[in-house]
Image 1: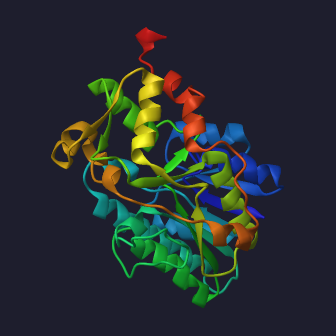
Image 2 (image 1 turned 135 degrees about the vertical axis):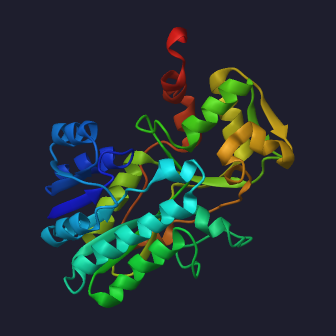
Image 3 (image 1 turned 30 degrees about the vertical axis):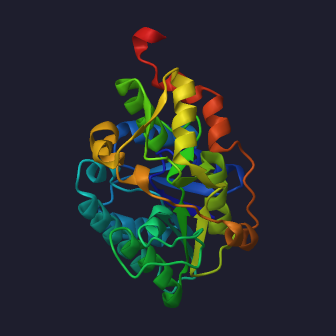
Length: 308
């Protein structure tokens, strides 16, 4: 299968490209920079230059492919305060790709996050059957699912907020480590009993391949291995890795200590992937988040140059 991937040189993309190539697929990766293009070429992918704002280019690449995986998102824009703008760009890209695939029966795998479920305060473990009617990022998720009625074998993977591994350089975990290093303590809010799900990057990459190859049209899938780890335990693991204490802070202090992660760090997001595992025969094989933190690669990567 000729597979077009947006975000192919990013965190998950860097694991997904070799996963697909090893399974016998051809990969065409979207690259917006020379560095991304070089990384994709070195990995064995065909490079297509462009970005999420090049809607005509997205349509053309999707038309020429046998399947599409959409990983890219304007994280830089979102993290600097314009989450709505980043989500709107994501929706436009999804709609452009969907228009190109309409009536083809080709697979289209989109990306969302389990944190969308925390916004509706389920009061229980979230499942693949849970959905929201709309909102930033949710609109794109729902648009992909709706393409099942337009002749596209569409599916969406809701990723855990912590997709972890030595490939993770800029996600929530290295960001939390950087904040703990700067403040001399790893912080959690209140008693830290709120839970975050997690998944290893290599397990997530395999899930994308399985969804591409066989997810039924209109499927919501959960990229979750650890259903829910207490945020306090994550902070304590970071503290052990840095040799600093884990401390409780108030909700009022969270913005100053945790920056843009302050709201996320207080969300309770236990999430099941039981249906996903059955539907596409996916079983996580790699270390969980706490075991991964104990392997120390996160702390070696985040050490200042003068400390190495």
